Image 1: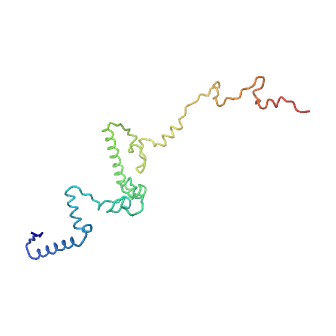
Image 2 (image 1 turned 45 degrees about the vertical axis):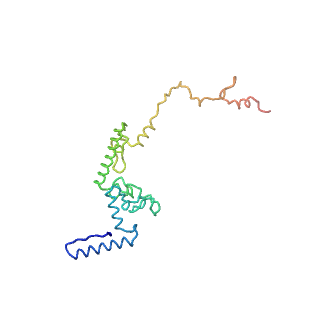
Length: 211
């Protein structure tokens, strides 16, 4: 028996509409290539979704140009470095926090701060699970100044470095302390000569002037 389709409906008009739709589908399948057949692509997507093997390439966002429908290695645009920027306030792409439209919004700043604190908490929990102890001062929540204002909990790293650089070991200033090796004269003073005159000038000083 040939491949056929049985159409049943409540009226002749509905049957005629169904037959017209079926003929259109058959004509499209016979004349349009499989790669350009939208109905065939939709059926394959539904089948892949039912099987759990669906890869949503059509809604995939390109990380280079920001468009949908292709990946970064398939992008025809030149390399765009701006799209790789991630805002710390709104968590968007394509701009920095200083250019964010929400940087003056207290609610957005509070949400960004809570998001960062949650990430820090998850990081600490992960380190605790694997048995690694992490100092709280090494996380960003304690000493972050960035876009959320300075934190009074800890000093910034450059201030701590300046304090460490200005801390010197006191040297006792005793009059009897010996001079350092580089301050001592490496040329010994010959016997019978004054130490105030250098050796290369002593021979000149001993010769009497001409008459």
